Image (cartoon, rainbow, N blue to C red; front, side, top):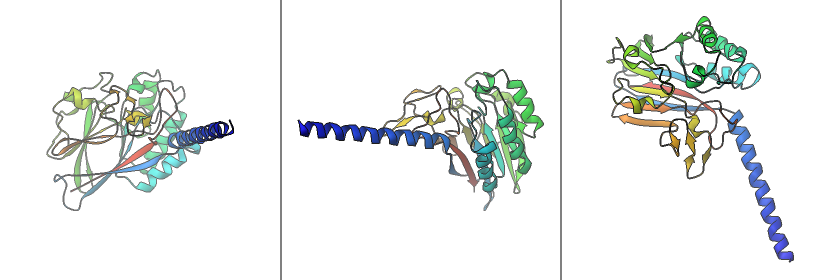
Amino acid sequence: MERISRKKSIIYVTLIIFLLFVLVDIYYETNVFKVNKVHFESNKLNSDSRIKLIQLSDLHAKVFGDNNQKLIHTIRNQQPDVIVITGDIIDRKTKRLHDVFHLIEELTSFQQHVYFVSGNHEWGNNLKNQLLIGLEQRGVHMLNNDSTEMMIKGMNLNLVGIDDVSTNHEDMKKAFNNVNTKEYTVLLSHSPGVTDKYVEIDADLILSGHTHGGQVRLPLIGPIVAPDEGLFPKKAKGVYQLKENQHLYIDSGLGTSLLPVRFLNQSQLSVIEITN
Protein backbone atom coordinates (compact mmCIF):
# COMPACT_ATOMS: atom_id res chain seq x y z
CA MET A 1 0.00 0.00 0.00
CA GLU A 2 2.85 2.35 0.87
CA ARG A 3 4.52 1.72 -2.52
CA ILE A 4 1.25 2.40 -4.37
CA SER A 5 0.80 5.62 -2.40
CA ARG A 6 4.34 6.73 -3.32
CA LYS A 7 3.72 5.97 -6.99
CA LYS A 8 0.52 8.00 -6.93
CA SER A 9 2.34 10.90 -5.27
CA ILE A 10 5.05 10.81 -7.94
CA ILE A 11 2.44 10.76 -10.68
CA TYR A 12 0.55 13.70 -9.13
CA VAL A 13 3.73 15.76 -8.70
CA THR A 14 4.79 14.99 -12.28
CA LEU A 15 1.39 16.05 -13.61
CA ILE A 16 1.49 19.28 -11.61
CA ILE A 17 5.00 20.10 -12.87
CA PHE A 18 3.94 19.35 -16.44
CA LEU A 19 0.83 21.50 -16.09
CA LEU A 20 2.89 24.37 -14.69
CA PHE A 21 5.33 24.05 -17.60
CA VAL A 22 2.46 24.21 -20.10
CA LEU A 23 0.91 27.26 -18.41
CA VAL A 24 4.26 29.11 -18.25
CA ASP A 25 4.95 28.29 -21.91
CA ILE A 26 1.50 29.49 -22.96
CA TYR A 27 1.92 32.76 -21.09
CA TYR A 28 5.42 33.37 -22.45
CA GLU A 29 4.74 32.49 -26.09
CA THR A 30 1.51 34.49 -26.12
CA ASN A 31 2.88 37.63 -24.49
CA VAL A 32 6.58 37.77 -25.42
CA PHE A 33 7.33 38.11 -29.12
CA LYS A 34 10.46 37.09 -30.98
CA VAL A 35 12.14 38.38 -34.14
CA ASN A 36 12.11 35.79 -36.92
CA LYS A 37 14.71 36.42 -39.63
CA VAL A 38 14.23 35.16 -43.18
CA HIS A 39 16.49 35.54 -46.21
CA PHE A 40 15.68 35.39 -49.92
CA GLU A 41 17.90 35.80 -52.97
CA SER A 42 17.18 37.05 -56.48
CA ASN A 43 19.23 37.90 -59.55
CA LYS A 44 16.80 40.77 -60.12
CA LEU A 45 18.76 42.71 -57.52
CA ASN A 46 22.14 44.29 -58.15
CA SER A 47 25.21 42.64 -56.67
CA ASP A 48 25.77 43.64 -53.04
CA SER A 49 22.18 44.94 -52.82
CA ARG A 50 20.29 44.27 -49.61
CA ILE A 51 16.67 45.22 -48.94
CA LYS A 52 15.21 44.76 -45.45
CA LEU A 53 11.47 44.51 -44.85
CA ILE A 54 9.67 44.06 -41.55
CA GLN A 55 6.40 42.17 -41.70
CA LEU A 56 3.75 42.64 -39.02
CA SER A 57 0.78 40.34 -39.23
CA ASP A 58 -2.27 39.38 -37.18
CA LEU A 59 -1.70 41.77 -34.29
CA HIS A 60 -5.42 41.57 -33.42
CA ALA A 61 -5.05 44.82 -31.42
CA LYS A 62 -2.71 43.16 -28.90
CA VAL A 63 -0.39 45.49 -26.98
CA PHE A 64 3.18 44.55 -26.05
CA GLY A 65 4.45 46.67 -23.18
CA ASP A 66 3.19 50.13 -22.23
CA ASN A 67 1.75 51.71 -25.40
CA ASN A 68 3.41 48.98 -27.49
CA GLN A 69 6.85 50.39 -26.68
CA LYS A 70 8.50 46.97 -26.79
CA LEU A 71 7.21 46.40 -30.30
CA ILE A 72 8.04 49.92 -31.49
CA HIS A 73 11.55 49.82 -29.99
CA THR A 74 12.31 46.47 -31.63
CA ILE A 75 11.15 47.62 -35.05
CA ARG A 76 13.09 50.88 -34.84
CA ASN A 77 16.30 49.04 -33.88
CA GLN A 78 16.02 46.80 -36.94
CA GLN A 79 16.23 49.89 -39.21
CA PRO A 80 14.00 48.46 -41.94
CA ASP A 81 13.73 49.91 -45.44
CA VAL A 82 10.03 49.04 -45.59
CA ILE A 83 7.37 47.99 -43.07
CA VAL A 84 4.48 45.87 -44.38
CA ILE A 85 1.35 45.03 -42.39
CA THR A 86 -0.41 41.97 -43.79
CA GLY A 87 -3.84 42.32 -42.25
CA ASP A 88 -5.77 41.69 -39.04
CA ILE A 89 -4.16 44.59 -37.22
CA ILE A 90 -7.43 44.59 -35.28
CA ASP A 91 -9.78 41.81 -34.21
CA ARG A 92 -13.37 41.68 -35.40
CA LYS A 93 -14.35 42.33 -31.74
CA THR A 94 -12.07 45.38 -31.33
CA LYS A 95 -14.05 48.41 -30.15
CA ARG A 96 -11.26 50.98 -29.64
CA LEU A 97 -8.62 52.02 -32.16
CA HIS A 98 -6.46 54.14 -29.85
CA ASP A 99 -3.70 51.54 -29.35
CA VAL A 100 -3.47 50.70 -33.05
CA PHE A 101 -3.35 54.36 -34.07
CA HIS A 102 -0.65 55.08 -31.48
CA LEU A 103 1.45 52.22 -32.85
CA ILE A 104 1.06 53.49 -36.41
CA GLU A 105 1.91 57.07 -35.45
CA GLU A 106 5.15 55.84 -33.89
CA LEU A 107 6.08 53.69 -36.90
CA THR A 108 5.41 56.40 -39.47
CA SER A 109 7.42 58.89 -37.40
CA PHE A 110 10.65 57.11 -38.39
CA GLN A 111 9.69 55.16 -41.53
CA GLN A 112 7.86 56.67 -44.50
CA HIS A 113 7.45 53.31 -46.25
CA VAL A 114 4.64 51.67 -44.25
CA TYR A 115 2.15 49.60 -46.28
CA PHE A 116 -1.07 47.84 -45.34
CA VAL A 117 -3.40 45.21 -46.80
CA SER A 118 -6.66 44.15 -45.18
CA GLY A 119 -7.43 40.86 -43.47
CA ASN A 120 -10.68 39.08 -42.74
CA HIS A 121 -11.02 40.64 -39.26
CA GLU A 122 -10.97 44.17 -40.68
CA TRP A 123 -13.83 43.22 -42.97
CA GLY A 124 -15.75 41.74 -40.04
CA ASN A 125 -15.41 44.82 -37.80
CA ASN A 126 -17.88 47.72 -37.84
CA LEU A 127 -14.96 50.13 -37.38
CA LYS A 128 -13.36 49.07 -40.67
CA ASN A 129 -13.88 52.35 -42.51
CA GLN A 130 -12.77 54.39 -39.51
CA LEU A 131 -9.65 52.23 -39.23
CA LEU A 132 -8.69 52.44 -42.90
CA ILE A 133 -9.21 56.21 -43.03
CA GLY A 134 -7.26 56.62 -39.79
CA LEU A 135 -4.33 54.56 -41.09
CA GLU A 136 -4.14 56.60 -44.27
CA GLN A 137 -4.35 59.88 -42.36
CA ARG A 138 -1.38 58.74 -40.29
CA GLY A 139 0.83 58.12 -43.30
CA VAL A 140 0.20 54.45 -44.09
CA HIS A 141 0.08 53.56 -47.79
CA MET A 142 -3.02 51.50 -48.45
CA LEU A 143 -2.59 48.75 -51.05
CA ASN A 144 -6.20 47.74 -51.58
CA ASN A 145 -5.88 45.86 -54.89
CA ASP A 146 -3.16 48.25 -55.95
CA SER A 147 0.60 48.44 -56.43
CA THR A 148 3.46 50.82 -55.98
CA GLU A 149 7.00 51.03 -57.30
CA MET A 150 9.70 52.42 -55.05
CA MET A 151 13.44 52.84 -55.11
CA ILE A 152 15.29 51.36 -52.16
CA LYS A 153 19.06 51.82 -52.03
CA GLY A 154 19.18 52.38 -55.76
CA MET A 155 17.01 49.32 -56.52
CA ASN A 156 13.49 49.32 -57.91
CA LEU A 157 11.04 47.28 -55.84
CA ASN A 158 7.40 46.53 -56.64
CA LEU A 159 4.92 46.11 -53.81
CA VAL A 160 1.55 44.69 -54.84
CA GLY A 161 -1.27 44.41 -52.31
CA ILE A 162 -4.64 42.71 -52.47
CA ASP A 163 -7.60 42.88 -50.13
CA ASP A 164 -8.43 39.75 -48.18
CA VAL A 165 -8.78 36.62 -50.32
CA SER A 166 -10.58 34.55 -47.66
CA THR A 167 -13.53 36.97 -47.79
CA ASN A 168 -13.34 37.37 -51.59
CA HIS A 169 -12.35 41.04 -51.64
CA GLU A 170 -9.28 40.64 -53.82
CA ASP A 171 -8.90 41.84 -57.42
CA MET A 172 -5.68 40.35 -58.77
CA LYS A 173 -6.06 41.78 -62.26
CA LYS A 174 -6.43 45.31 -60.94
CA ALA A 175 -3.61 44.87 -58.43
CA PHE A 176 -1.08 43.75 -61.04
CA ASN A 177 -2.16 46.25 -63.68
CA ASN A 178 0.93 48.00 -65.10
CA VAL A 179 3.36 46.17 -62.79
CA ASN A 180 6.77 45.66 -64.39
CA THR A 181 7.61 42.19 -63.10
CA LYS A 182 11.12 42.32 -64.54
CA GLU A 183 11.81 44.12 -61.29
CA TYR A 184 11.65 42.32 -57.96
CA THR A 185 7.98 42.03 -57.01
CA VAL A 186 6.47 41.32 -53.59
CA LEU A 187 2.79 40.47 -53.22
CA LEU A 188 1.11 41.21 -49.90
CA SER A 189 -1.86 38.92 -49.27
CA HIS A 190 -3.30 38.37 -45.81
CA SER A 191 -4.32 34.83 -46.64
CA PRO A 192 -1.85 32.31 -48.08
CA GLY A 193 -4.90 30.75 -49.74
CA VAL A 194 -4.15 33.10 -52.63
CA THR A 195 -1.66 30.49 -53.87
CA ASP A 196 -4.43 27.88 -54.07
CA LYS A 197 -6.94 30.19 -55.70
CA TYR A 198 -4.51 31.54 -58.32
CA VAL A 199 -2.13 29.13 -60.03
CA GLU A 200 -0.14 31.86 -61.79
CA ILE A 201 0.96 34.78 -59.61
CA ASP A 202 3.51 37.08 -61.20
CA ALA A 203 5.44 37.81 -58.01
CA ASP A 204 8.84 36.70 -56.74
CA LEU A 205 7.78 36.66 -53.11
CA ILE A 206 4.34 36.38 -51.48
CA LEU A 207 4.02 37.54 -47.87
CA SER A 208 1.02 36.29 -45.91
CA GLY A 209 -0.30 35.71 -42.41
CA HIS A 210 -3.80 34.62 -41.36
CA THR A 211 -2.92 31.13 -40.08
CA HIS A 212 -1.28 32.20 -36.77
CA GLY A 213 1.02 29.25 -37.42
CA GLY A 214 -1.81 27.09 -36.15
CA GLN A 215 -1.69 29.09 -32.89
CA VAL A 216 -1.45 25.86 -30.88
CA ARG A 217 1.08 23.25 -31.99
CA LEU A 218 1.85 19.83 -30.56
CA PRO A 219 5.20 18.03 -30.39
CA LEU A 220 5.81 15.79 -33.44
CA ILE A 221 2.34 16.63 -34.79
CA GLY A 222 2.70 20.35 -35.45
CA PRO A 223 -0.31 22.67 -35.95
CA ILE A 224 -3.71 21.25 -35.08
CA VAL A 225 -5.85 23.60 -37.15
CA ALA A 226 -5.49 26.83 -39.13
CA PRO A 227 -8.07 29.16 -40.75
CA ASP A 228 -9.05 27.99 -44.25
CA GLU A 229 -6.45 25.20 -44.04
CA GLY A 230 -8.46 22.76 -41.90
CA LEU A 231 -7.08 20.11 -39.55
CA PHE A 232 -3.35 19.47 -39.50
CA PRO A 233 -2.62 22.11 -42.15
CA LYS A 234 0.28 21.61 -44.54
CA LYS A 235 0.78 25.36 -44.89
CA ALA A 236 0.83 27.02 -41.47
CA LYS A 237 4.00 29.11 -41.18
CA GLY A 238 7.43 29.54 -42.68
CA VAL A 239 8.86 29.43 -46.20
CA TYR A 240 7.33 27.42 -49.05
CA GLN A 241 8.93 27.21 -52.48
CA LEU A 242 6.28 27.49 -55.17
CA LYS A 243 8.55 27.66 -58.22
CA GLU A 244 12.27 27.83 -58.84
CA ASN A 245 12.39 31.56 -58.19
CA GLN A 246 9.12 32.07 -56.31
CA HIS A 247 8.46 31.68 -52.58
CA LEU A 248 5.54 32.02 -50.19
CA TYR A 249 6.30 33.16 -46.65
CA ILE A 250 3.64 32.79 -43.96
CA ASP A 251 4.22 34.83 -40.82
CA SER A 252 2.65 33.23 -37.75
CA GLY A 253 1.79 36.66 -36.36
CA LEU A 254 1.76 38.55 -33.10
CA GLY A 255 -1.74 38.16 -31.72
CA THR A 256 -4.41 35.53 -31.21
CA SER A 257 -8.06 34.98 -32.06
CA LEU A 258 -10.85 32.91 -30.51
CA LEU A 259 -8.67 32.05 -27.49
CA PRO A 260 -5.75 34.14 -26.17
CA VAL A 261 -3.47 31.12 -26.25
CA ARG A 262 -0.29 30.18 -28.11
CA PHE A 263 1.57 26.96 -27.44
CA LEU A 264 4.91 25.89 -28.98
CA ASN A 265 4.33 28.75 -31.41
CA GLN A 266 5.69 32.03 -30.09
CA SER A 267 4.34 35.42 -31.14
CA GLN A 268 6.67 36.98 -33.71
CA LEU A 269 7.42 39.72 -36.17
CA SER A 270 9.50 38.92 -39.25
CA VAL A 271 12.63 40.58 -40.61
CA ILE A 272 12.92 39.72 -44.29
CA GLU A 273 16.15 40.38 -46.15
CA ILE A 274 16.40 40.15 -49.92
CA THR A 275 19.81 40.07 -51.57
CA ASN A 276 21.37 39.27 -54.91
